[in-house]
Length: 336
Image (tube, rainbow, N blue to C red):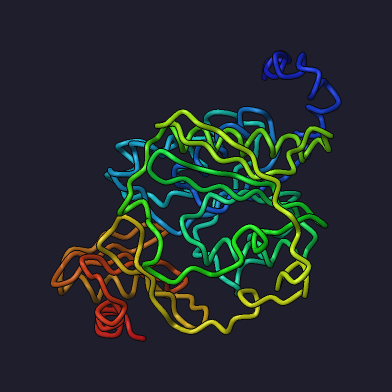
């Protein structure tokens, strides 16, 4: 590897040679590899952050390519898990960085595995439940994390630091399903997701280096109107998380349930108890009913119904819009 790989970055006074060494030893979890997570992960990989845990539950689809920068048309054709495709791409970008893929639906049962051993977590998710869970888990561990979100032409980001206001101080009320826009209803410009994710990555570098320039405010941008503003979020002494130490999402009992996926006519089903499925055996049974594609990471089925099934029992049931319909498919073809 060329000794000058990070020379321009080391020339910057905020990093320098000592800072570059710190980055090479740093470990970051990127939770969600959509429009935000792919840009942030790519930036941190190129900056020389030594370890990136890449976490996502989904597979690459053609509609992702407009804004999710680590993926290709081949990834979409092969329906590669995003975590695997991202790790493969980043390994080609910087072989000195360890990119660890984790194909998983982030929940209270595995959030400890997601955050194990890292110095910082980045939010690249597309739903509030994951963010509230990440907030509680990081608060319980004293771990910094960075919130980011974007829809349409607007986006925002905020560092959630130990001892400071938490995400629940920023967004106190858990929004009801259907009460807020999603990427499937409001769309998203790749320009705003890129800008927000790069702000997020820059703050990540500052946090990892212990920079006094680390932001303490919430940043919002609207690239369509060309506006940007910062707001100081105050710590709420009565906040359920950082004020009272209550962990509603972290201690929630895990039941079999479903969630509609952003921008897709599909519902994800997560079994109540962790499973270790024998996908080859199930593939042999399903081939009598339709077309089966089996990889080390998942089973895809196209027949009277369509779904993707993962080794831990999680499934994405396609062409359905309700949890009830998705559970019926799961029960009939997989067993619930």
